[in-house]
Length: 244
Ligand SMILES: [Zn+2]
Image 1 (spheres, protein in one colour):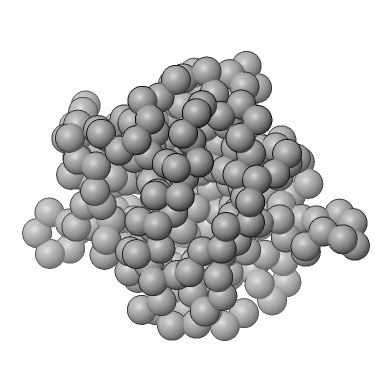
Image 2: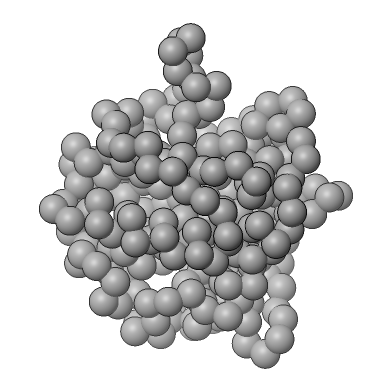
């Protein structure tokens, strides 16, 4: 697989290159699937049982590191999470704020290290100082990235954690006013966390120039596109519990 398929850097694209995580090495990259008109979606990876996904019968706990976040960031996170929850039917639990960083989430392979920590860290949303972000994303062409993380052993087909990292130096416009505002960028990254890959259609939130002939998407699209919604539904409650 390509690192970018999992890492999935966004909007401005760029094949980011974090060190590949062990559980992702066998993930095949699949081409976008076009269905019903212009709707287009793709999964980051799949097994014989279907796309890799979270167990929709368990809530997803998320935590936010606001240390370097702009004012109002938490409002955008909550609304983006609400939109993902609505589209997937999966319940999210607000795990509060944390000082855990993207570096720690990646460096510890998403796993708690002490007995008072959970087996896998909750999904983390972190604003990363610019220089550190460039290092983590290994590109200057992206301003955020999102990725899910699959479990070990019997949970190897199930996402159990994830990370959204946003470049704190980018000063994204707060809210959901246009495609490149902070809230919509969060939607795109959370789409990756749920298991969606980039598509070519400029009418999807998961659009990326990496895979598209369209140099720019519809800038005023701030809601999920038809393919986004189809993909998120297939990754959500409608697919049933994910048996490990
Ligand atoms: Zn992306």
